[in-house]
Image (cartoon, rainbow, N blue to C red):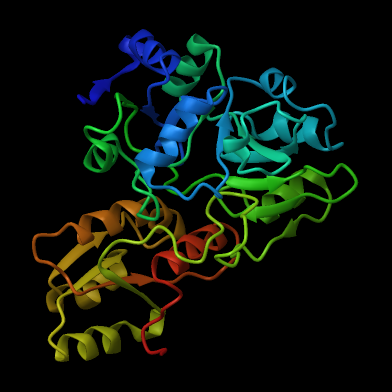
Length: 342
C-alpha cells in the first residue's frame, strides 16, 4: 500500500479515503492522530490492527463542533457549555455518557461513555468539516511507543500500512490532550489524563474543585481513557529519569559501566554533561514547556540513533501545572524508573 503525503490543498483526497473506510493520519496541536470514520466499525477495527492497539483501550472521537456531539449524547453536565466555550477548539477532551449504540462498541471499548474532542489545527478542522463525519484519532504510531509529533514520525511507523498522512507541521504542545470526565452530571469533573489544560487552569476558569485520577490502571482493567496503562510511550532503549541534583553522578556512574548514554535536556544540563555522553537531544530551553514539546521527538530521535544507545537520560520536573502532564508521560516511558533507585 502506498501512503500518500497530503496537505490542505488535497483535503478532498483525504475525505475520499476516509469515506472508503481508509485511514488518514492528521495533525493536531498535541500529537498526530490516526483518523478513521468513527461511524464505521470496519474502519475503526483497522485502526486497532494497524497500531497493534489493545481492543480494551477506548478511542477519542474528533468532531468539527459541539453540535456533532449532541447527536450521540442526551444528558450533559452543567459545566459542559462553559468548558466548550472556553477550551474548544483546543487540547481538552471531554467524556460524555452516550446513547446506547450511538457509536460502534469498538470505539468505546464497551464502555457507556465516549471521549470527544474538537482539535484546533486548521488542516484537521477543514478535514472534519469536509468529511461531515466524526473521526476517531488515537496517536498515529505503533501502540505503546512515543507518540508522533511530526508527519515524518507517522511515516516512520505506519508507511505502507495506512492510505494517507495529512501534513500540518510539528505539534506545538507535544503531549496528548487533557481528558476530563464529565459523564456524570451529579459529580465534579475529574481529570483522567493530564495535558496542557491543567487542573489549576480548569479550577480557575470553572470556579470549582476539579478532581484528578491516579492516571494508572492495572493491566487487567479496562481504562476509561487512553493513556492510563502503566507502560506506555516507551522506546526500545531503556529510559531513566534523573533528578536535577543527580546529573553528574548519573553520567559518571553509567559511563563507568561502559554504557552508551543519550541525554535529552535543556541548555543548563547539556552544558554540564554533553562532553561525556554519546548522543544528545537538546530542548529549546530549560522550561517544562520546552521539555514537554520535545519529549516524544527526543525519545524517538535517540532511540533510533545509529549509535545504538544503552540508556536515555531525561530530566524530571516538579509535578505541578504542565509538569503533571510531562511527568505522567515520562514515568510511563521510563517504566517508573529513576537513576539511583532500584
